[in-house]
Every structure is written in C-alpha cells, then in structure tokens.
Length: 434
Image (cartoon, one colour):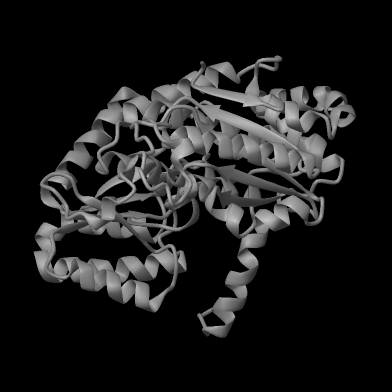
C-alpha cells in the first residue's frame, strides 16, 4: 500500500451532487495556492517548505539537539498554539505510550511543554520537577510577548540561571523567533542564545516543519530527515490538480458535506498515540476556516475509548456531523489474546487473535454503524506510525486546509478573532495602553 491512502466511498453517498459540482472550485483553489494570488498570500511559505528546506539547516538542528541531549535530562518546549502542538503531536505519536513514567536515560532527555496554559499549579509543579535537575529550554515566540509563554519563560529562565549559573544557562536556552525584531529576538541577542528563525511567511499553525517543530522533535530522538522526506513526497504528489491528489479529494469532500448541511467534522482515531495529532489538526482547521460566519467545526475523539462516552451522540444525535477516521494499517509490535481454561469472561473466541485485529473489527463495525446512522465517513489509512509517514500526513492536512479554505471563500491564513479575548484580558489586568 501507499504510505497514506484516502477513501471517501462512505461519504460520497451523502453529498455526491455537491462533490461532483465543486471540482472546478477545488482546482482553482490549488492554482491560487501554487501561484500565490489569493487572500493571505504573504503566508504561503509552507507550500514549498519541505522541498526548499536545506540539508544544512537540518544538520544544524540535529547538532543543536545533540548538544541539548548531552547536557539535559529534561528540555522544556515553551510555546502555545502552533508553537507547541505540532511538536507534541509528532513526539506523542512516535513515543512509547508510557514514556513519561520512565526516568530519563543519558542523552535521551524528556521533552516537556510549558507556556501552553496559564495554570498556576501546572507551573508550580513543573518547577518542582525541574528543581535540582539538568534541564534546558526551547522558547518559541515570534514576538516574545505572548502572555502564556512569556510568563512560563520568565519563570523557567530564572530557575535555570539560579541552578546552572547565568553563563552556563546561556548555552542551555535556544530561542526560535523572528529574524530581526521583537522582545525575544532582542533578549536572545543580548544574552547570546543560539537562535532559529520563524519564517515571516509561515503562520504558527503551519510551522511544524520549520525549526519550531523540528528542534523539539529532534531533541526527543526522532529522525527529522525522514519526517521532511515524507513531507517532500506529499508536496510533490499534491502539487497539481488531478484525480490522485488526495489533498484535493479531501478538501472537495468536506466542502461538499458542508454544503449538504454537515457542520461538524469529527476526526477519529483508533490509536491513542494520535490524540495530540488530532489536537494539532483542530487548531489547523479551526483557526484557518472559522471566520466570516463560516466554517466546519473541528472536533476529535479517541476510539474505542470515546465510543463508551460520545458514541451514543455520534450514533443518534443531531445529523450535522461527519467523520474522518485515521487508521494505522500496521502496528509496530504484535500481541495476541491468550486462551484461558475457565473462560469466565467469554473471550476464548478471540484467543490467538492479534489485539490489532480486534481493534480493526471495532473500527469496521463502528464505520458500518455510524454510516447506517446517517454519519458520512471518510477513512485515511496510514501505513505505520513513523517519521516518514507523519511528515506526509502533516503536509497532506496542511495542503488540504489551504485548498478547503479557499473553496469556502475565506482567508485561511489569518486569525483576527484570536485577538478579541486578549484585548479584554489586558484591559482587565490593567496592562498599559489598554
């Protein structure tokens, strides 16, 4: 099989007329993206980012990651939104499910996250964990003044300098920020931190394949060369409009369903390692399409877990939803159900079967039930959970998002509504100028 495959058969039935009618709009959207002639065209740096990323940059990122690995037991990635979700999505997908219950090994630091909330207990408990430990910081912010990460960095920087000394701390902090301006750029220059640039033409939610995501992923021990190779392959395969362009097909199908009255897309997975990938996807689509009174609401569930909580609503609730399921074709390990002589739990009919076979039948049974219940269903099958596949999956969703946003008639690359809460918060906190 291909690394990533898309099947829309169980969705097409619900909106075939709309799907057949939006082909020209999708192809115009792809042309608009490739030629850079649409709204937000100053934020299209991600479109050719995989193929234009130099090996020199990847080598430098790997060298920085090695330095942090050799000197830290914990590395804290400080950022919010696109400045942390992409890295966490990939790191979680590639990690042992119980990684954080194990102590750090030499040269294998744990990557932690801060600045993605303003939780006082979270911050205090993170400080408690890091007290007396060898740790470093990757601080990610274009401006350096975003409230949540700025608070976290101020606190963690103080702790690191207290424990390691100001001179040593300088080599344990890496800033990923604007090339020339902003508070973090100024501080990094003054203190002598190693820095990486957030490209001006790449928005936060599209930045996982820049140093924003690549450095924390490399520090966690994953192969960013393979990640980028997968993204390059997907970039090439989705470059032009054609029947095999899965980004085009996905964008067309979701817009067709939206036209037919389906207002909520539920991204479902049957592998718990994909939970944070869905969180990244929610930001990508929610922030890109939710504007001008339009947009599909992005939601996510972890199956089979959420079948025991959200399953009833999905099966019989208001019929304004459709599902996109990510299915992993082949797990990295094999575990079979044992036989039991007493068979008190009645599971001997499963004895000898792989757990994944049971999971796949749960997936198929769920699809059948939900489609019968009036829920259109798209299925994305990925060959395995590895760097190459995830790089392709990231770019697939990014490209489809750009196409879909233009088809919807919005600017997919701005987020004016995000500022509303900040203005109110700053006013309530009596920030100067508000």
